[in-house]
Image (cartoon, rainbow, N blue to C red; front, side, top):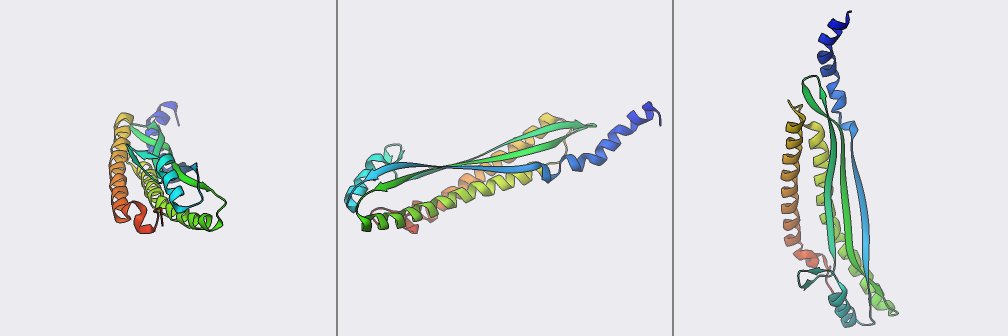
Amino acid sequence: MTLKSLKTLLPFIMAAFTPVLTSHALAEVIESSKITPYKITGGTVEEVREQITLKGPKDGDTPRISHINAKVGWRFRTQMVGSKCVITEVKVMISIVRTVPELISNNKELKSQFARFRKRIDAHHEGHANNARSMARQMDRGIAALPRATTCDELKRSVERLGNRLGEETAAANREYAARTEYGRALGATWPP
């Protein structure tokens, strides 16, 4: 085989190995999670409510008991293989940050009641976190499954469109979940209980 014939066959050889380069095995989802507690004190249900109102996260001017921020991001690499651009590596990241109350009290009954309340907050947050995880899995699979493109810019635009669509779907899922659970109230994530 001459060098000239090898150059002629190279695009065909590379095309044969392209499925390996776009294999889903090269993709990964990485999750980071952080809990940011805000400390409250009190010996009565009312004192705890006042502390939550004073120290809890705000939505504008409206005090909230807790907050979850779940973001999905991604990175990927492309490479020209023959006359087509392919995805060679995908990394999808989920960052989940929860702001929750942490009670400091000597009242054992109140602490027990508060612990049950916190479990309900955590359960509510988990629903939003699961929506982000679902988006991350879909993004992971979606990027890895994108067809080869004529240019890498074209492939990057396809990834952007996929991310925008899944982001909108996830935002809608979060709105529906929040409404269905009455922002956690239907799950018992309210104080006073």
